[in-house]
Length: 459
Ligand code: 4AD
Image 1: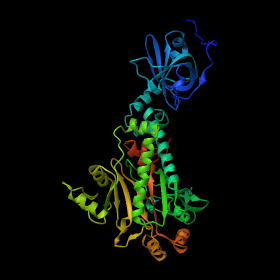
Image 2: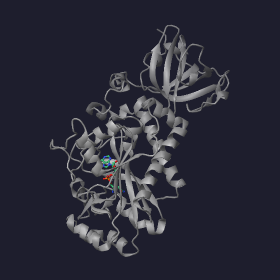
Image 3: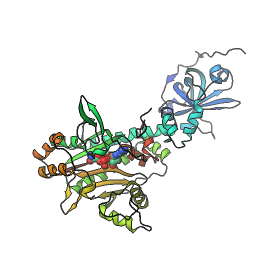
Image 4: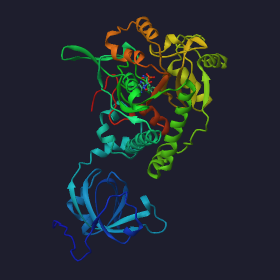
């Protein structure tokens, strides 16, 4: 057979290069050029239909049967083949369906990077979104990310991050960037990643909180969106070893102010996402049933939660299989059951001193408990942990001792209590957990580009 070589018809109008998020109606009837990759192929008698993606959108490209469909390239088109397509952009004919209601009537194309067809075997599993958190799919994450759902989660993640940034800007919070390499713990020694820092012991940060506290005197309310690291030794749906932590610190506030702020902040972020057409479309694709939770969020004290767990029929038991008692940690399973049964966001407050971090302020009306809050979301459980901070110097020194923390490395933190201490508080929100809630993901492992957890440090 004669080898078919395509050439561009130079008598046609010059093609305008576009990205697929350009949905301008003026493009209809225009000759355009699109760089992208094949997402799907459907070969029919009269034409070959390619669904092409370019990282900005999807487009149906129609290659009428003839020379265009008979080249070696066309016969070996495969998922992920990279190419440039030229043709006229048209409205899809009545009764037909295509992304954005338009299609490209191709008159010329050039393959830029061929792909073997074996990929289809891999991404077929993935494109049907069968357990994208499975080990095999995580090994193939670099290819899974080419799928529609995985990439939608990543696009939505960016929109979420920007919504946080916008919200904090509107609230006049200053963004800072604390160090990831530290010599102090925040949330307990058992989850510290230790490493050798020029011969000294150092850790990957668990939280930027202590550093945020050092700058409220000069910068006012502050926040950061940085990585936090936890050497979690259990494999759960919501624990990562490396995660994105949205943390904020507010000066001259009381506990109720902190709760009001959290409610306002979450509410505004959700509003911004839903008002953003593109982001809202991703929410719709990933979590069609999503509705913004109604305000105010339920506020429940830890002690009342313990009673609530025990009052269920049958009672929701603790990890030892016994009824919950005051002082018990409410473990992940019980917390989830409760959140799913109540089925609305919960501000769980006033946790006992013993089960919370050393820096938390005690409730003056009941010194067994702290002014602390966890925000629980249906489907995920805890997405935020926050508290008011201990204000008194001597009390802090005492707290280090009680928690077996040598105070020397914390001199800079302790100094905050010496030089003009203040009533202040803050919180940390796990970005992946927030996204798991918003995008209805089974696990945080699909809410980050390349997840890290015990046993996985690749790709
Ligand atoms: O409750 P945590 O441990 O609180 C702190 O780190 C505070 N120092 C934050 C602060 O007040 N500035 O963590 C806060 C949030 C959790 O609610 C959860 O959403 C997320 O961080 N988080 C994790 N996300 C994924 N994987 C893990 N291993 C996480 N550990 C905590």
